[in-house]
Length: 384
Image 1 (cartoon, one colour):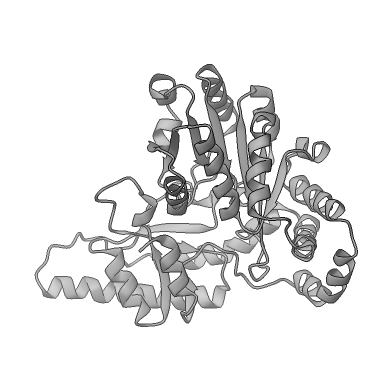
Image 2 (tube, helix red, strand yellow):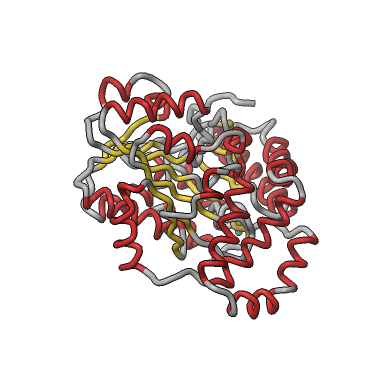
């Protein structure tokens, strides 16, 4: 099964720890926004689509610290979901007959969408992006596709390294697509303007933004694609073929949530809401064989964990029987014939009570698995 298939099954589960959508409890100010939904409906229905989009962009990019986008509203396309934006970017790569170097591990649906459009895809590892691998191996004219910060590892590029990657691509006539779906969880990304760096580099770029990973708006969400001038005719064409416009009601509802976040402190507000869920996960691990498998997890609202032995798919099946849904992480390794079988992901944008209950079940199931393996005489690493 794909990640999305696992996640769709989890929508029927008692406790859903599968998808990365924002499903946390609302704070009072957010509940107040929901209570004004009739007013939002009538106000946005009577407004110009352009005005609603520009108001949203000002709130969104302002919170993100992307100040160059506040003065430049061009080359910007709203879609029903981030996946629609991914599709448009894949179509642009196909239209230019570009080979794509896609980060691994990452969302498997990016790979599937690229391949469905007939794009040739090669893997590039996080360590290779951080090294001189690009300078020595990148095929000129190709596209580099990164998720920053990356799902599920939290890998990202600091400003200096970002500049070096852009400079290398410029020398090799390359282009870049950047998926910023989890940007608001990464402290470093507020500190410098990624769009300004891209414009200064002169390389053709496509940037994908998402709202559904940050704000729990009951899947009222959408994607935003922004691109360099050289890509804009293609972006306009493919967006025009896909849809007319995103609902102004959705745009205004999410904008109001963004304003709540900005008023409450921006990144500090977002990170503080993750503190208790992350501590719940961390507190459940001692005394078990479960291991942390990512060193930069604080950049994303999730934990990547590993089993001491056995299959995460079998672990997933055992947990399903007890009403807990999580996501085996093997599909993130989309190019590997035998991907890691021990990894699974826990999202943190969940009510703490649900997460606490789920972690107790996860801990119990892992302990039962350990005891069963010991009883059966199978070798099991002593992680206790």
